[in-house]
Image 1 (cartoon, helix red, strand yellow):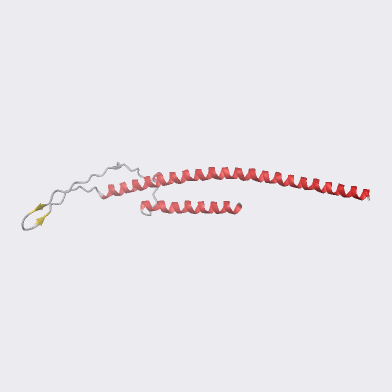
Image 2 (cartoon, helix red, strand yellow):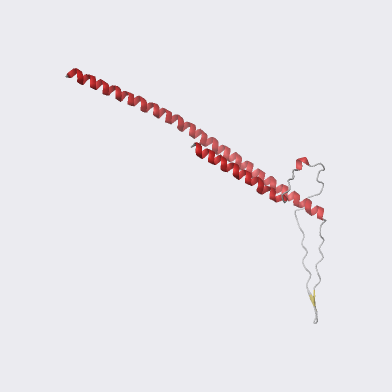
Length: 152
């Protein structure tokens, strides 16, 4: 039983440790914690993206020409900020999931620990009952032997 608890604890530590490394990949390997932000982020987060439909291709008899659709590209800083915000949201979500999983594991451990203690107490009581019963049988055997000796 002790081996199973140790194995379970080890596997839980490995899973949680690997989850920490996996979640850091969302921010391209950069550690970013908003609590330690010196300057607050003032940019608004846009979750909708606009896509421009391509204009129809104009074709002449001699050559094929296309007119590209005009799209406005946001400044690189806002794209990076949006990426960081998305990465932070993903990290927060992963952290919440892992914490919920930890709470679930703790409650399961508590339940199993209580069952273990109860079974351990029951086992000790049964061992005591067995010893007392064996002692009674031994006393009865010795009494029978004494009676047989007195009859002879």
